[in-house]
Length: 389
Image 1 (cartoon, rainbow, N blue to C red):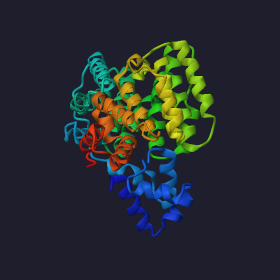
Image 2 (cartoon, rainbow, N blue to C red; image 1 turned 90 degrees about the horizontal axis):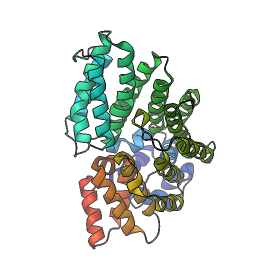
Image 3 (cartoon, rainbow, N blue to C red; image 1 turned 90 degrees about the vertical axis):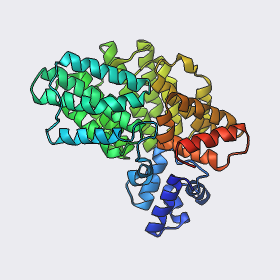
Image 4 (cartoon, helix red, strand yellow; image 1 turned 180 degrees about the horizontal axis):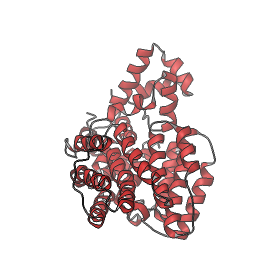
């Protein structure tokens, strides 16, 4: 039985609740819940995770993230621990790093974020702990304060938080990074920093199932469109609105997607804040929102309209292939295509496939009914590399 299904069953038994009771409270059928527990159906939507957590009276993170807390095997096992120690040192105002000129730190941050976008998780993990310490040490020394605080906002949201998520590190570490990014932005009267920090904070809250707080964060975030850079970051916040609407079954997610698409048309392709916002990213976000809403057919249809090679960022291409695989896994007769899509995601970003809870759940579901053929062997290989078999 895959980890997530086992965890769900253990929590249900610990609460002394029957399949019928939990399924009813969560708004799904008893058979659906039974399949999830046996690993025959993926638990791959935030809304369903939250509903089941509420039915079991536990935090969503207790249900969905504990089974994925170990760092990915493709990344050094010590990297996440080194990042943890760096964050702890910073929280005690004892970063222990070098005080360096802001331009030197800016070059290092840019190189790390480029590696993150290229899914070079080993390179990022090796460089991140020292960079965290050095940027915070420079800030503590009062050197180039404004520029350094801008670097802190960008580093912690697009570097620390994003990398920790990709390698399956515990959720609390990513939240620490989001908080540090937000604190740095709060000291600056700069709309770009505020937008970057709001994105990190909202996604940290969304991952934890705190939808009301995520909504408040997004509502308070500035959304100017006077410059191309502002339009790109506003577009990322609007995309997040649509994801939140799908996760909480509230708001007009379609209107948010249309608004983001209109901004993308004005921008073309961009990379402000290392977000890669642009026309090529719009359909990838539409796919993610359709999956969050449980509309696998719509997500699969959208996937068929995308030319993956036109997506400039490897990080976004990996997201496309992973979400395409998740969608096709639920379409009758598309198992082979689903496995091929997941394999493409793995070739670009092994960590994303192996450690992200939604793709792991899909792998587990497919592996539970794999056949003894070439595609089945490919599937079982991926499941093995993800630690599922």
